[in-house]
Image 1 (tube, rainbow, N blue to C red):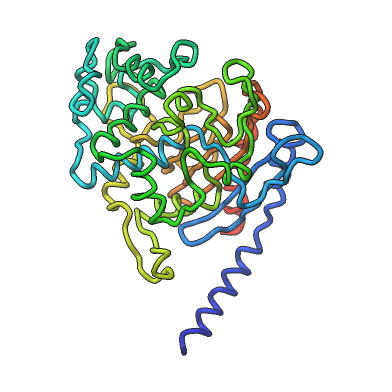
Image 2: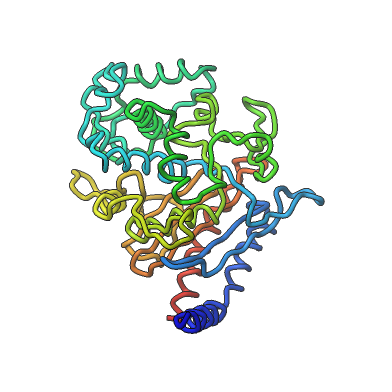
Length: 390
């Protein structure tokens, strides 16, 4: 009982410190993005290794007059954030448990994949996106079943020499998800729920949401080229859709609150507090050395690389005609990822800073790419605000 006043004093001091931050400039950036019709709704969360420093929801589900307002419980199609939050984490688990090796050949687990000189492709090359596979195949134009899509990947020839360059490809992530299923013996969504989401109390993070959950999910695109309907609560990515909504490359739905639980664990070297022991018991989701291996930029390559294993790090400014998504001010000691639908998670390890920014920028059409300017400005401003108080 004697410790209670000291604890309360700590909370009061910490609350005053957090409230001293002025986040209005960030609100202006996000609100301007909405007024420019870059996205109808958004969630923004800024946190550190201990707690959430700022969290706000903006806008509405759509641009319609009576559209529901975005709240903290609203959910987004995470698109390619699936690759890191779910698939890469699942691979980390299997690697930590010695069930796979990163230098294992993909064909060891998927023998059908060895066709057309692909027998040397490794799990490591899938994680680094230098496997030799094409960047993208519009499967929806040619196939209608999971079996057809997988057979197409198995029979696809190399597009370039493995380990020669970086080519970001959904095919790599799809294969990683299949490896998780082959090794674990259960579906990717079940593995992630059991080994990642449940331990972290991520109750709003899931694949293939049912009708009861869909009402909380912001719509994405009006698909007028294939499905011919408004997409809401079903995966936006076409390949993941054909694969049943559960795929290594896309299909995960979540919100900023849940993603903070995940990113805080990542920033804390794999440690988290078990919610079922009332936060009193600290546990490890990953060993610190395993986590560091996956989020550290991989440098032992014949080309200039900014990728970690599954994750991205700070890109080179000249690597794209667009601004880097994590902003120019983020430290080199960072890791993160973006999603096609307008989502992103980034962690600046030097600053102990987590920035989560979720939008549905593909509503009503993917042609809108204003997020490319808003997102780096959000990250830059968040870092400026935190720097002013430190």
